[in-house]
Image (cartoon, rainbow, N blue to C red; front, side, top):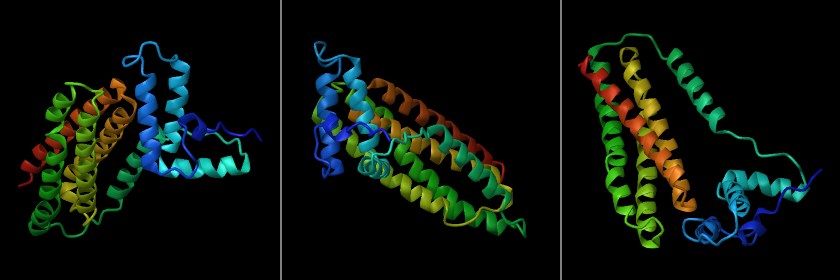
Length: 237
């Protein structure tokens, strides 16, 4: 079997390097060879190699699988999971709503779900989605400034923690059938928010504005889903 490329050599880190060390090495190389920061740096091929290495080593699960392949000289290629993951989430949501209990759905159950699930999730989403514009404006002063990037990363880290809380609240109890539409909007809103955070995280490590713009667009979609949930809940109350 063909031995996979040595991504550790590409990023100039030890195989025992921590995730923080891998990220630091990638940011250093991405900044060094990014054409906007250094027009005289090596061409697109080297940037592509660096990005490919970090796509694997920057993800703990993918890194673990890569280490296994590297150890046994396996030639299995990394599969692209982005589209498949989203399709799987859609199927999962549909399956969840088909399995919802269709028993007695009284007003008390609905109001309880609104208080215990909808309202807390909505507040947590606001804490993530609303500050993005201000954060991006602050970063725009100098996207390559390490201090500004650290502040932006701190915002993303806080958002991930807040998103995890929102997802936990959403899963804490089944929704009554009459609010299934609201729940579906929230479900997809949470997923879009998570995908947006993934893209914004890639911007911090790659300095590529493509990821920043994609993250902003996913947040915009998430806000739209949040508004649809708000409109749907008003018809129920």
